[in-house]
Length: 227
Length: 170
Image (cartoon, rainbow over all chains, first blue to last red; front, side):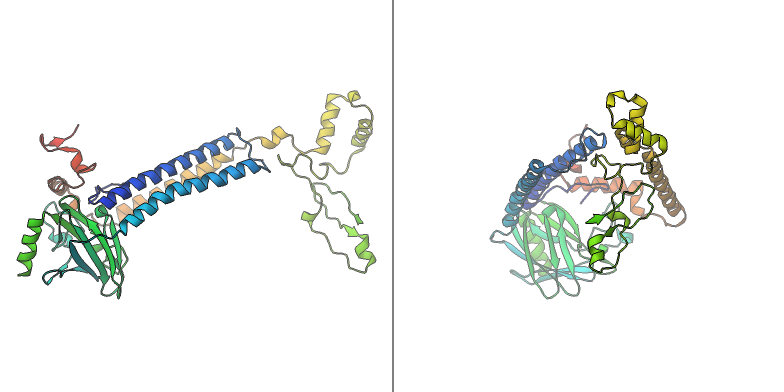
């Protein structure tokens, strides 16, 4: 989860999110360089160190066409690399279905047994001391650590979106359609997210909580629930 | 062949006629102001289409006659007068800054302040109390819980807490 006034990303808990954070740093550096240059030139012009009455300038026109094209390539290549990385064929250890409703999520683990449960937000009035307002749920999504998890996301009524920022996951839940995503939780922990597609009055009140636990703990949990 | 007259900056209307158009029986269309030669003070137009002063007084006409002779015979004041006949402002006058920025900045601050007043009014008269999860007790319990569950342990909050000494890292 984020701090109260956090501006940047949460720490990555999956390799894809690590890549995304690095790319974002790179892109922001490019943006900083461009903005500094523009601000510098603007200052030169406003203080009349640089004429703003130029009417014919073929050479600089060439420069400021070629240079931005190169900058765009510098941005495009890492971006496409990560995009393809996200689509790599991996063999998931677990498949999880996330179904969005108004206004809660249903999770199904049907690989081995029929395990289905709903996940509702805990109302603020019912929160135990120190728990996170608008983020806690009654039943968390438990997944084993260091395992590739495939998530099939869909919705039952209107559009929703299943998002967990620290895992680098955001997938739209569309009625009548199955969207697939996957993640790999590198460390044990609890990761929070919120519904990311406007879906009615309680759109802000159907969070997602993924708990990454070591495999024995996961097995213990899943067998105790479905028996 | 176009027969057109020269116009002063004062902007009296005049009609430019074309002998060819007339000869072929077209009617005379009143020319718009922007199509006629005009005077401008612009850095990138060093030689405007017309002189600034159109109607010369007798004194100025005499000066123009004197201009046809050798220029070294002209005094400095006469040269300046000739300049002022041709041009409205000098480059220095044209490029001079104004105090407009003070007005703009003042306006910006005014509206920022006005917005602030609205926000303060809203907070005082409109909004209800904030959720109970913002109390000191709740926030400290919440922070402890975040550290216990190792939220953001790489560069975030759990990375700034010294778990051995039970205090924030220096």
